[in-house]
Length: 124
Image 1 (cartoon, rainbow, N blue to C red):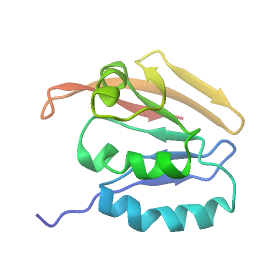
Image 2: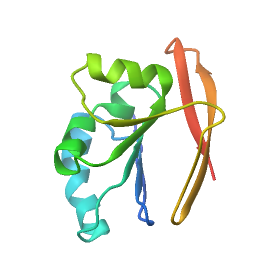
Image 3: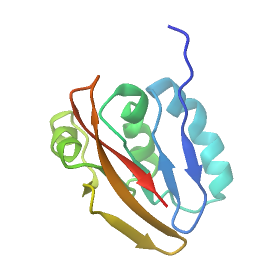
Image 4: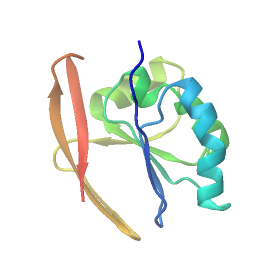
């Protein structure tokens, strides 16, 4: 299938990457993200729901940035260890607010009908 998958980086203090993309995308985008961050850490990785285009490259980013916190739904925070992903998770729901430095995010839950699981989105 030929379709576009997007990742978004807020190069703020703290920095946050929205979705990792697939493994192949993460391998291609990591050097660009490192260049944009200019030696600063990637502080957060936001995972909207458990699907390969949203979290497939998470290991690549966590290898480079092991202290990055993963913001994900409570369900995803329980699934990641079962997939062999060890990380510091911020298990979010519709009432979670992350205020740190330049960011002020509120998470909103939504049903991922196709994925049959809860997902989260962020609102600034």
